[in-house]
Image 1 (cartoon, rainbow over the protein chains, first blue to last red):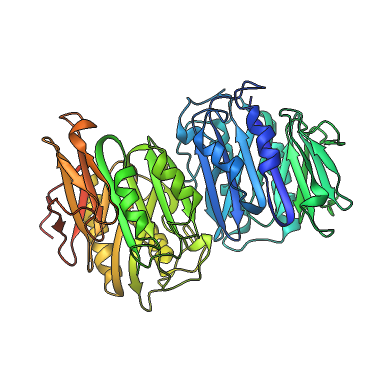
Image 2: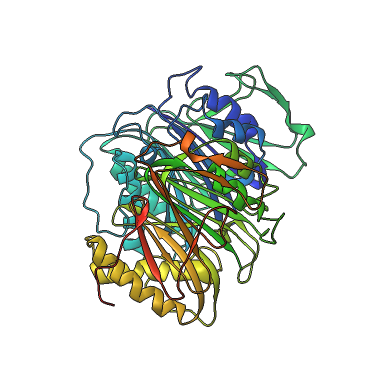
Length: 260
Length: 260
């Protein structure tokens, strides 16, 4: 299995603190050493860093920990290979373009016998079940909505249906973002926290590192962090329910307006 | 205008020496300070680094200069904005997936009144003429060959036609790679060199730096470097002809078998 880390904020925020704890699980405090990756949206653009070295040994991960890239939507992944060999093309997050926007996707889990037909619009480059699922997701969104992006609510309902369908083949914890919103689906394990005023101190569980967020934020800032296992020891993290899809916009989960 | 750097090799090779000279033109020895980017193929995967800071000021460029990533196909770009604001989504190289492979593209030049209809399969995320041209190129390749990738020779003929068509709208120096081959088209300025046994010393023109390639290579290595302006002072670089498309495979230009 792998681990996922996502961040969705209302102002561009750096993820150095959370990534530092998370990356430690990529070979030191946990066994996810078969590559890692992180994608930062900056406006419509994306910086994508992937590496088939373990996150604890990677010079690129060192850069991320020391260079505060500010972003409103981030998705990161550390990999323990289950399907697909250890190779760069199998490292998450994956990226594709749909509707003139980049879409970024990462998956934790294992799908069994999942090989729906792909019509050629989006095809996997590597050999993971994860990239196949991502290509299928985008293909179905494009089939459903054509060349015009739908409203966020319609998109959420469709992604909710698609994640249920894919999750019927196995474990499908996933994160998906187009740079304006972040979707997170939980099959088995996913947690989140919303940090907002009044900000307090947070202490990492995987490293001897604390940060006082009140010193680095303004009262209007709001940051949602979504992760497989809670990153800090002194904050209250919320568990996702199994089968739940959450939509994060501007640093907070958005209540569903649909009845599904 | 911008500058381009490409490398195509028969064994994975690092580009630290050439990139060091090239990056110096991104704000120090030349004026290309509106962002930069570099893409490395590793097998079927790609590492893509883009930054809207100048290459001389970028911490990511420092990493590239100190971390020898080995690749058989590399495309790099330093940008002086002509069309499209200075923003991450306008930094080259651009990346898309076609036929289950990543395609990487960078452009130096300026196209006037170039806005062919795009059918939705590939759409620009940013606002450059360059990304529009890349999307058009891939769209036309997919229309021409459908879901099955053609032979390299058929691909070359089609890309030759497409680059002539696009170049009729202005200056279109470009590099394109799918990780197996590198296509380079010259409108105005492009140079290349093939380094092979017996390797000698090379001295950068933009930095006080030399390397003796005979110390870091084996007799079977072959490396083609393609660049807007020659990078070294003591080697013989070949000029492209205007309107010429060259195909590089395994570190050398491949003679055209067509009569066009």
